[in-house]
Length: 445
Image 1 (cartoon, rainbow, N blue to C red):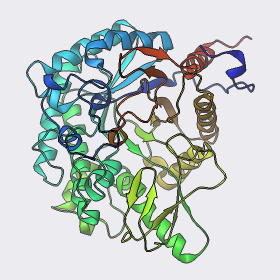
Image 2: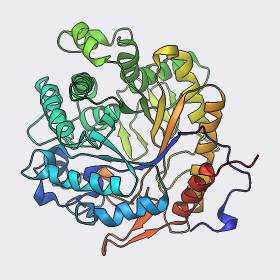
Image 3: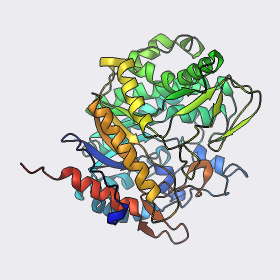
Image 4: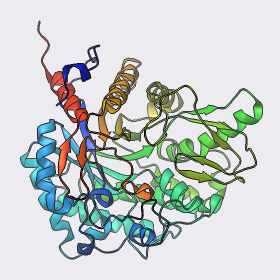
């Protein structure tokens, strides 16, 4: 429980009635029970020496598969409206695999917590490949099966999580599964994920689902200087990491020049990719400061950027850093959302912040409280500026397997001892619980 001196002194502004408050996780990062599902590209990746910094795997992770009732009790005590989890495609394809999600969804509903299901969070089944168009069709078949099983209780759906990062880190730079270093030859993986999204929207609609979105990672791109070379590099980075994934969804077009690089009948695919959304999910962590290439490899945020890229990522100076080395820039969230509204206008549906969080050590995690407090206030400023924001999900409920970082980064509101699997709520858990209680308090007068 947060103590009085851990609470920021200034009252938090009230969000609109019906605003959805939640927390997020993903299957591969918390479930464990790897022997009870099929193998994924991440299982193959972590089995290769040197791929994960601490040499760990997600075979056990938080053992949420066996401890989900304990974790749902934590959600209920926290007081969230909703819980964003992901369905493991490999588990869903395994005998009895969807039974687990039946039990989880039933437990959430009994606890009064709204289930929000993400259908792909990077754990692609082994043997499938986003470079192949057929994977998009296979994804739609899987989505239909999940919706048929859970759609009577799950009302809110997310097709994909962060196709930009999955393309960049997994297929272009090789730091995530499946570990390819294709640079710009990775573009088909982006296109096929977007096509899979559109086919999944159609599959969900066919199953009677009416609350469908996507979770894309976005952040403002700041030029390193006013030098034309820096500005040009920043524009290119913004195109690759923001517009290449938002424009097709919201406008039905790729940015100029990008569509020519994509495989297949792109015009026909874009009609599928641009299926109307009920809301647009944004995962926000920080802006990126970008300049002209410097002719050398750059280490940034745990990722090595090769010298041949047509941009370089620079530090954002004068900002506190998380334990992951990411800059803390709450106002970037306001800038991002107001910028999206200006760019897309009426084409931008209601927005939900599907992830926002930070990595810090310790149970008395005052830095996390300050981070979340600042970002929630920044989100409210976007609402005041006229952006239609409908919800906010903290990443994450639990400390978990943080991909190539292994267990070295702790994003959870709840501490997990990975030796004993004991859960211990942190100070930030108490702070968020207090915030939610205050937001629901009926004003006097």
